[in-house]
Length: 306
Image (cartoon, rainbow, N blue to C red; front, side, top):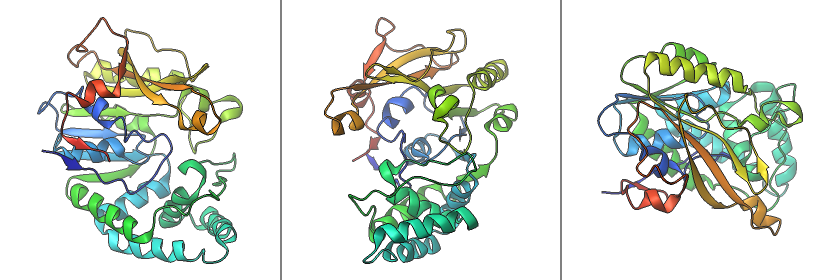
């Protein structure tokens, strides 16, 4: 059986395309709760719940309006769809001016639905904040984003699978790690090392390598299994150094040609690192270090990401 997976919130870095590969490492019927502390678009949660992999789900993020948006979707998507439609139609003949007006309003009132609009309409669906915590990404001048009718369908589809099974929480990921209990499974997708320090800080909250190592050490001590999407590379650019093999097993996913490279006329390939808890059965082919998405698509037929 195949499932169509809802995807109402666009988010740069979303693991929607990688969901099958990531979830293929989780043994069936062994864990009861999936916790996604850096949820963003919650692509892994949505894919897992569509495949009936866990009985409950925790969507968590450091961005409070995003968490509020998820709870609104879970509780009742109708008001979200209506207000999104109003914001989308505010553009009319002056889309760029309207975008900047809504962005300014969001930076004052922190409206969850205005955040949804901004994510849909901003450049590359890339959430960006300045050091003062203000959303500062520019509008995409080439497209108008998700039309209201399609957004309504996506919102209701997400509500249908999440209601009664999931809830969203705002806060630091470490509190979830510390409170983890038997039956939990963590999927962690924090900001990469290269975007959590120096001049490239772009998210509402970065995560240092030291804190991530501490979190994995706690999960290992508590014997809580996890999968971590962390560093990686695009062409000659590396996003961070590999973690120590004692923490987890590392595999590399060749996810194909970078869309940004394509726009710039280059052939750079993006490689994502997955760190698999030692509590999970060994990788199916230990002689290989790099896997393609096709390797996992052949083995898992639960999900449809078209």
